[in-house]
Image 1 (cartoon, rainbow, N blue to C red):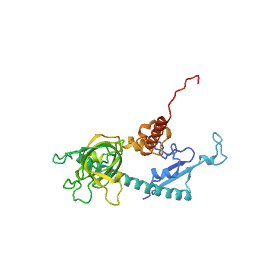
Image 2 (cartoon, helix red, strand yellow; image 1 turned 30 degrees about the horizontal axis):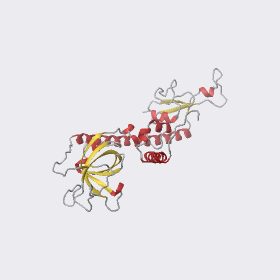
Image 3 (cartoon, rainbow, N blue to C red; image 1 turned 135 degrees about the horizontal axis):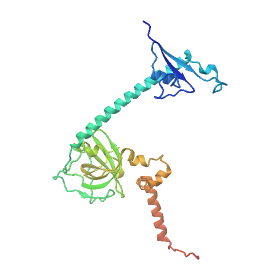
Image 4 (cartoon, rainbow, N blue to C red; image 1 turned 180 degrees about the horizontal axis):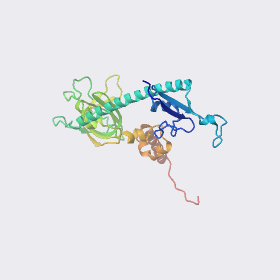
Length: 305
């Protein structure tokens, strides 16, 4: 039984490659590739093309060659066929990626819902925490614990000082069961380590840069071969979120990225100054001005002078 033939029309000059075209003579496609996508090759399907020849004029005097529909050449069909196969592979890869991203998004959403039920509480049996600035280094006030312990926080004999610090999250690195974050308070930096249940709360899973935290924990020396500001770190036993910073498109790293437009950086100067380089420049500038004012007498001349 012979299948009825179907003609798909392609006009390189007057056709349109979008859903408003249907491949008829009145609404032809512009390219063979789009015609293949909308009407995949099959038995009984024929692609008819036409195009204006060089030198042919439009209007009443248009040449007959321009008006006549002819079957697409074998070379054009072969070229379009290769492009169509590439299109299918790309589309399949895109569909696979979309499915994988959706699965990961669903998995994360489920984890976030479960994390909302996870609550942490401060242990009243722990030693009273000492409130310090992040740059506090007085050995009479702070004792650093060294060595190894089976517990992340261990206030046994020879323990480190339990402290309470506040600051903004300047750096953030999340691993499977541990979160490394660096706090900044305008005086200095301090690396804090969150482990165990502290990493499984909703606040931990959605933590963003510039979030304000209050953290309780034990001061430790940094293990050999590791690096941290002032070679020390805080092993947290409890924390609270004072204020959560925006994430995603409104995150500070998005709004003031290094390759951002200069005008954007000027408009968000208050965010730029939270970076180490910009704040260091301003500190040097303040020190230079202070030195000049201490050395020279400041005079405000009149307009006549």
